[in-house]
Amino acid sequence: MSLQGKKILLGITGSIAAYKSAMLVRLLVKAGAEVRVVMTRAATDFISPLTLSTLSRHEVYTHVHDEGAWHSHVELGLWADALLVAPATAHTLARMAQGLCDDMLTAVYLSARCPVWVAPAMDLDMWQHPATQRNLRTLQADGVRIIPVGEGELASGLHGPGRMAEPEAIAAFLEAALTPQGPFAGRTVLVTAGPTHEPLDPVRFLGNRSTGKMGIALAEELARRGARVQLILGPTPLRPTHPDIEVVPVRTAEEMHAATVERFAQADAAILAAAVADYRPATVASEKIKKQGDELQLRLVRTPDIAATLGKRKKPGQVLVGFALETENERTNALGKLRRKNLDFIVLNSLRDAGAGFAHDTNKVTILSADGTEKPFPLKSKREVAADIVDELAHRLARRP
Ligand code: C5P
Picture 1 (cartoon, rainbow, N blue to C red):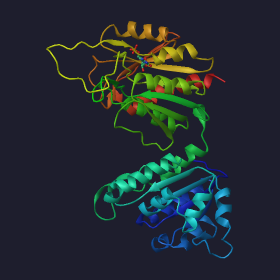
Picture 2 (picture 1 turned 90 degrees about the vertical axis):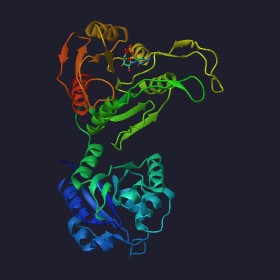
Picture 3 (picture 1 turned 180 degrees about the vertical axis):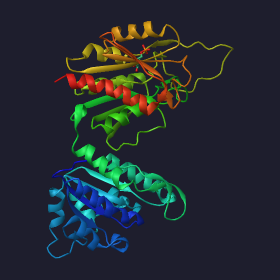
Picture 4 (picture 1 turned 30 degrees about the horizontal axis):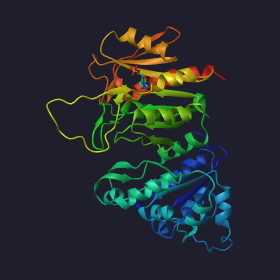
């Protein structure tokens, strides 16, 4: 791991998980980072500033009024390449979300121009409280990256979500974001995922059984490898956990088309994993459609084909990847789509294979390429399938300027 020369400002707040901050400082320093520590008053009840100043080889800041520290919240905010608050208590998350600045850490947060990460740590009920979840959404909308909490035994003896991520995982998040390497460094990848809902009236829609699992797994894998990921996500309750994935929620095929086309010109690649409706109701009733007679006829019209639109706009160097979910003539149909939509490769999954397709945690795919190659893979978890697909994309990006 390398964070050579990176300046990391670590904020520690008053949670029992603060004992892990000592290990975190050690890991960051060992990885080559310069670390400065800011503690809230409550944090000093859990771990001694002396421990942290010894490990970070620098004085620890606790109070705005410390000698010589009055202006340093601005200096520290400007000095840092990254501000990481770990552990972040419910209280400090609330203060950050509100923009309060009643101590050194919150003053530094408001002055920081660098990316900010928080690694929350709290008890199960505090984590699940709507106020905490609301504050996290506010922080996310402000650009703060949330490092997902772990599940397990909490200091209170309860079991559930709320544990701070392990120091190794936190350091890995920072490393991937601050020093991206490999074919995805500096690359933007668009991913479409999930179903679309085509409204009939204010309460009904035409949809499909896609859950978005495969596309979300792809977005996670790309983000882990350092890509900037924009996930255009149809209606599904599932969300990615990686803090650096930008989620653009959409509902209909037309909304997904607009959101994807708008971003494609700036992207290096697009993976189209969404199950987009091919037809939508020709008209959307403004009031709920009433029962009448034994039959109801719906007139449907075609939706735009996102893959085909991007295929027409594709510039040299851009890579376009599609999916084909087939129930018969799998290879022929998939190759037809590959050509018609001008894709670089297509991921074929057959609903005839047990464990493949919608809602499963597994998938069995074959990658068919425009250059005529064909790679079949065994049944694997969707995370492993995502890694195979991303490997294939990595080869192609590595070959391009
Ligand atoms: O033609 P078919 O829908 O089977 O093609 C599947 C591929 O095309 C998938 O990658 C899917 O995400 C994409 N697609 C699309 N827009 C549509 C229909 C399909 O991007 N309207």
